[in-house]
Length: 215
Image 1: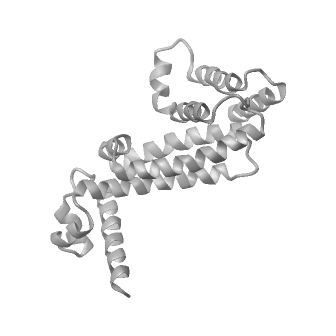
Image 2: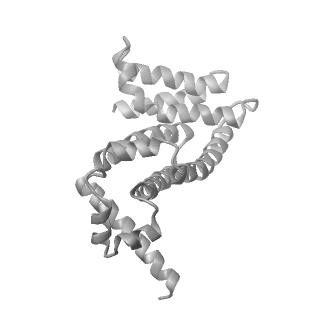
Image 3: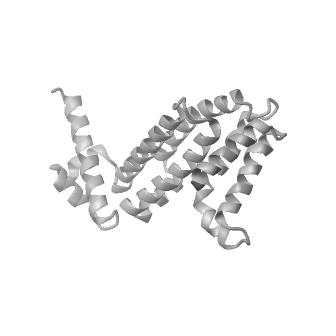
């Protein structure tokens, strides 16, 4: 094993140990010295790999985000799923993953994912481009987007829908509508608003998926 391979192995060891300790005790309750000791390195050696505990947390957050995008792209690449089914699956997966991260690592990790951390931002920017390119192409192929709608506008619109579960409960509690009714109306706005006109075949697709979910 050469020097670079040893360095990569040590870095991986620090990340894996920190991830385990954060899950067991929480980020706030795990100090840098404990991470270094459990990883079998000195604090001085730790600083050769990470500038601070916060930098290490950022690396772990970026890995969690990468895992989410791996799952998203797996859905994107499923040829047996229609565009509508994929969009709904993305929204559900995003909500589940955020809840999982919050339950596993606590609020500190969620706050890091939401703020402008360089490691997290780099992953988000590269992986989001990959996702949007694939899903928008399918949406156009299936006739869900009119040709005069810009890709930028579609990206913003899809992003709003995918992140909607984060505020879903609050919106529903302040409305006379049930959560299911609110979902249905937002779906109408999302899909048929982008299309510019109601196509019977596409409406039938959406109604079919709703029936499957109720069943």
